[in-house]
Image (cartoon, rainbow, N blue to C red; front, side, top):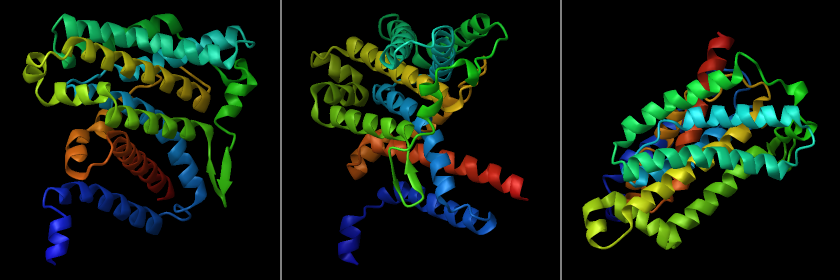
Length: 301
């Protein structure tokens, strides 16, 4: 008993509750819905979680600096539509150019957010709430009620979300999910073992002390927003590859899911020594599990 108390501190029970809720949700949905606990459900949830997970990684970087980015959903939608329009107009566009274009668009929008927050000293929630509406308005004007359809896209884009990198029985690991997992691993290493990552923690923990210590707080906040925008742009490309049919409402609601997935990341790092990227992935999976199970339950009933 004493050994258990030494290993599990009271504050850690709060984080264990999320794992417990995921297990309970799996049991309830598996009991109520026929064949819910199957490879098909796993493949569907991981494919959808890959998009939100990519956005959540960038959101985590911003949250670590005591800020928030509510414009990521609009960035995802604008990038998905813009890249889709270019691919539809030019089917011969190389994949790397398409990905680079997505990163460029997202990074530019993130740069605008970062400049206003870091150097304009406008609160992040006000700034990104405004740019959320502005970026969405730009998308609506650009789309002009047109839809990017699957048949207008190159075959490699359509097949990207359907291919399997490898399978374990009936469980398939697809490229979209693998890309997000690699991104989680890379940024976890960056946050844990680089000067950039340690500075993000320092600025978020105590901004005034970080300034007195000579840390470039404004540049770090700007970099966090730019990276967040780039990852949202990459998520926009994944969104395009997964759905194919893109309209002006693409990406709506992703901002709230990303905030929820990245919420509590600093607490988990302190209490559990669990990487922020890994915990964001757990949060993202729980959101997608709840949504998938609720929709399936409504249909089944």
